[in-house]
Length: 213
Ligand code: PCA
Image 1 (cartoon, rainbow, N blue to C red):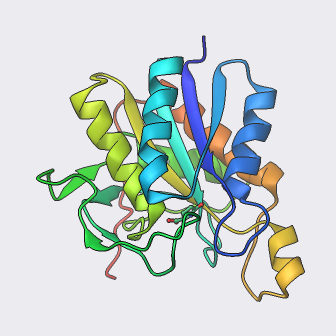
Image 2 (image 1 turned 60 degrees about the vertical axis):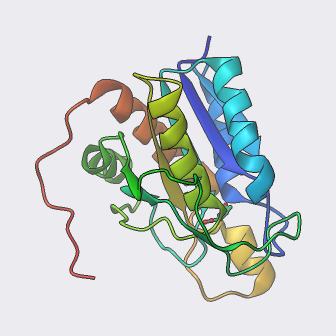
């Protein structure tokens, strides 16, 4: 049985691929202890799909990943907020504005991944990384918040969190975008470092990953 559940997203926003799903499925092909599930980029369907995957795989660790176009590094997320404010419609055409992920839920949840140790391990694998303090207000933040809420309410003891990843080179080349990119292979290496670190490290590094803005 897989110890680690990893999710990535379907393509969205006019893209034909999503490197989060490409990297997660690549990693699951490499490792027996990783189960990969693709989540729809839809506000209504993403969390039910995540819950089904948790029930099916019963992991001890959950790492959800999503594309953050424009970022140049792999970024483990520190905090999920109870807010959806969609800039663009999701893949089902829904565009909720200023809605909670969970009505009457807490304002935020912190990740239970050791994000600083994860960043150190990703860098040691040769991939640029930093801790992020915002997962945005779109489907990724919804899934991150929903994951943490599910773990607290239904799957106690299971650790989890969210990692945003840059565009892949094929996306940047196809659209002539100026943004940075990372190959799917290197993103998979980064996610592997996250999984291995989170399985091994329960207390995060006491180093600063702070930011002034
Ligand atoms: N990125 C989007 C949603 C799906 C994805 O891969 C986000 O950052 O919210």
